[in-house]
Image 1 (cartoon, rainbow, N blue to C red):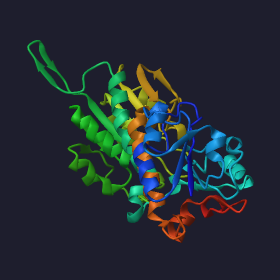
Image 2: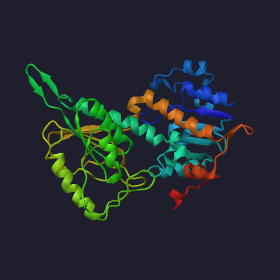
Image 3: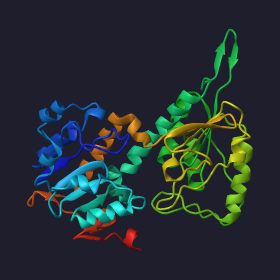
Image 4: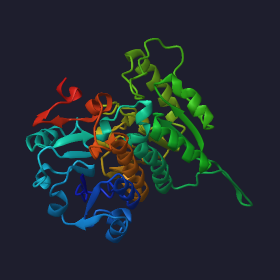
Length: 373
């Protein structure tokens, strides 16, 4: 069983799909690990570190030759996998809804693509959940990015020259990223409030010492989605929430938006008119900018200014913490493959529940029900 780890080629992608730690663990299972030269450089992992852990380091053609499993952070260009054998597994974050043409190309090339971002959110798959591990870091980094752009201090400071008021931070969307954003902003001394369409998050917000901001007594809420994600809101709820948020957002110094709905554009949470009510120098960080954005006017990959408010739209935020993001992601991949490792066959053998959820292509066809539905 040969496992190949490719060097990322997507612009701005600094993560790597294996670390010396996971190389050792795969080797202990009996696998041969081949790492593309320079794959870990952007994550502060030298080629020599991989070799010391037991991996071989070679060029792309060398690592792909006879590889049974190919590991990557983002789905590589199908053309760059030329030379991979038929039926080889590609295990990566593949963005199946946004990159359907690429998925079709994997099928045509005979690659069996396994999307880590389709991992079901069930108890036994928690250690394999790449979206959670990466979102956790994104929520943390969003607060640091906001603090870097904000021209004032976050905590209240009592000085001989007077008092500096604490920054007011509002987190919209209380999933993994949102919860980490709340915790991080609190650690920096900000006054934090948060909202979500899922009423179950109220206690989570309060447990972190933040103020919950929720619409009350409105029928037709459909915010409780499946798999831990938010679902669609009723029109009545959407209107009530917009009114509540508008009055609250005008008083905030920093707003961080994190709302995503799988397979659909990110919901619009902040309109241009609401941005205009914020005081000059305020900051908005849109973590959903690559899926269309929660904030009107946000631009992926840029920090722009509207009405005196900075709108931060960094791409691939976990990659901005490449070393830690890679360490967590690599463990997710190992946890996934090792959980299904068959000692007699010397390879992983997937079950139906998780295998059918993550498998996109097989036998030259796209086989995932979510893509064919």
